[in-house]
Amino acid sequence: MQILRTIPEVRAARQQVQGSIGLVPTMGYLHEGHLALVRAARTQNDHCWATLFVNSLQFGSNKDFTTYPRDLPRDLAMFEAWGADVVFVPEAGTMYAQDFSSFVEVENLTERLEGAARPGHFRGVTTVVCKLLNITQPHRAYFGRKDAQQLRVIQRMVRDLAMPTTIVPIETVREADGLALASRNVHLQPDERQAAQALHQALQAAQQRYAAGERNADVLRAAMHAVLANEPLINVDYVSIADDESLAELTTVAGPALASLAVHIGTTRLIDAMELRCEITTL
Ligand code: AMP
Image 1: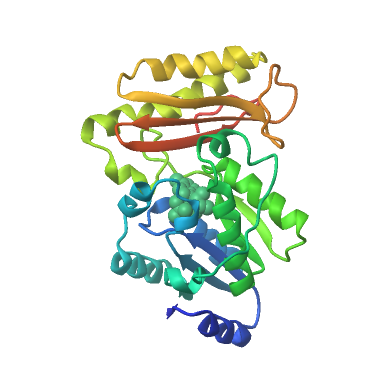
Image 2: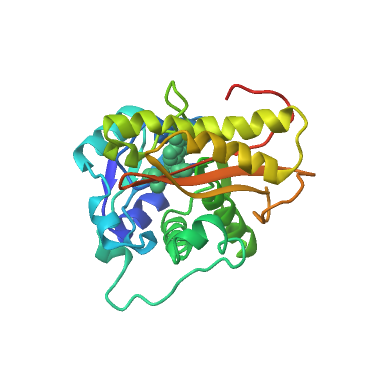
């Protein structure tokens, strides 16, 4: 596995490549969710490339950025064991020069949900993803469905700007009790970890009501709130039943829809999402 740290190094490696590249952008502190992306990238492409960069631009508070879990040696060993061919690990200064002044912004879609809760977050995400795609020039790039709005925002950016990379969504990998794997889960105290099961349970409650025929979005949101209210350690940031494409809140579910939520448990903020499906599912 090649570990590359500068843009010229990546450009040189890119020129050597024959065949397709599948890119897995990450912020590190890897887990099985990231592994699912790497597996898909390996299966669907001739080469699997990954990036590892904790992107300051997408963090609101400096504290969230500095406390984001990091373990570079462990991450590199995991990428190697998983069969990545190249990992790009840029320094902050490589990505953002002192006088860096160009940003990518997707409008409308970024104003809701995570965008409303975390002003500037998606501007940071789209700017870094655009730059990483420009540097690595992959045929495909892999993103998790857990970060449902991020996935849609990146798909929109790639479509709007005619970027020549196919965005491939990957299903959320969960713990046995349903908690979506996330780097930030490491911050949860044992009682908070226990309470965190309620995120998936709340999504399932909405999904079950939906599968049973409920189409009133207020009823579906109330079903999610009811589950979360059972956990005193959980502070709800938002609960949403939204149009799957525009992410506008719905009154009635008449087409593809996304259930999503964000909560605080202690000092940790967690998000999760589920596309509503007609069949009853235990996912
Ligand atoms: P992160 O390192 O948290 O920025 O995540 C890197 C990529 O992995 C993003 O596309 C995430 O959506 C994806 N990802 C994170 N957690 C999971 C998970 N539990 N299952 C599937 N994909 C995930």
